[in-house]
Length: 220
Image (cartoon, rainbow, N blue to C red):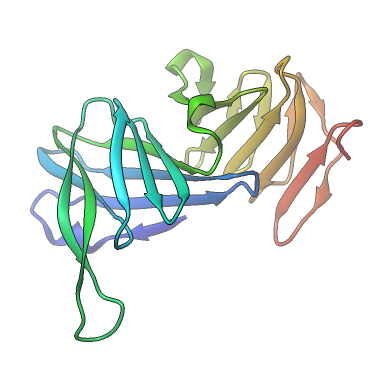
């Protein structure tokens, strides 16, 4: 989780926080928090590689194609406008080559949260939605559908305990992979000490610094 306070100089300051998570399962998850309490014009600018072909497939869904490879981009920015603008890329000092930039923007009266998924999974299988307020407490949650698999991604609020859809944890980020019957196959919990599913503490192992992982009996 990174935090940018460069807009703190404004009369009505805004703090931009971004969480980045690599699932190692074909997608990256990004979550942008724009914390402010006044009217602001927000922009998220996604710079694309040179010679890439960027197309909007449907609302909140784009494809980026280059040299036979396709990257899918899904967003939860429902009330934002978006457009593909001309831009440039600098491969070295003093050099510029043409490229494109996907710009999402919104005039807002307060804070905003936007989730973005970049994926190499088949585009027709993916669907990203934000959980409703009555589905999660103490955080923000998202569901990513991917064919016969699906993922739940929970991000805990600061100084709060988080519970959502039978899950409880003190993790900063909790990623749950589910099978076609929505049963958990594996869990990754970042900055966590415990994970509970339906009231039972899961037997986890430590992976890296303060990261817990759990795999079901058929996926260990």
